[in-house]
Image 1 (cartoon, rainbow, N blue to C red):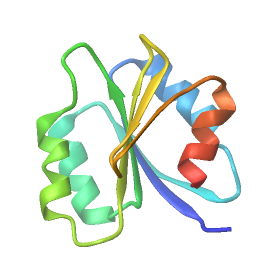
Image 2: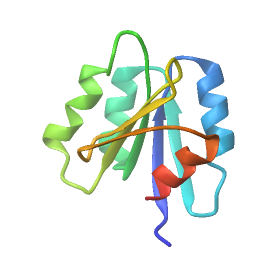
Image 3: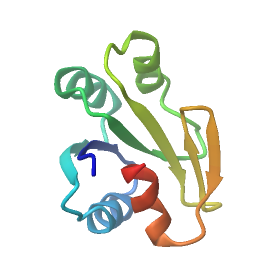
Length: 110
């Protein structure tokens, strides 16, 4: 199985802790997490994760992070998760609704 290198951008500390617990898996490497979008951009460009998880809030997607899609030179996908409506968006032209907590793990693992 492919090992996934994950970076998380969060707003709510509960989201951060929940995702950390859900993604404890031998095929997932937790690179880092931050609530600061500018720090996230810099760390993502440095670490080059293959998966970025973003907590989607009422403000939508962080524009600065979405700019990574325009400049990335490695194989990467962005997964946006909304706790408000159990919705996940995968930026590989897919859209899925989360039904169970385990769906996130399967989504990250591909």
